[in-house]
Length: 69
Image (tube, rainbow, N blue to C red; front, side):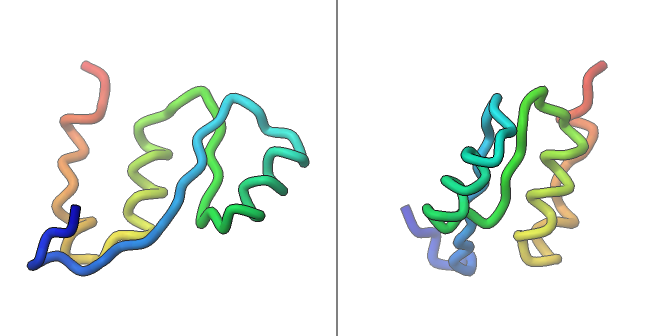
């Protein structure tokens, strides 16, 4: 789905439970832009997303909604 008023953002972020060399090599082969391992940490996800989103979009990510209460 393409939203006309938003720029095309092309990034592939691999999220996996494995952090081996072979897993990282596979991620490179499929041209992923980033690689994250479990456990999932909200701050790390936000940091990674902000790296690839245009600044006017990344500044509008509501951090409070992703943090645990």
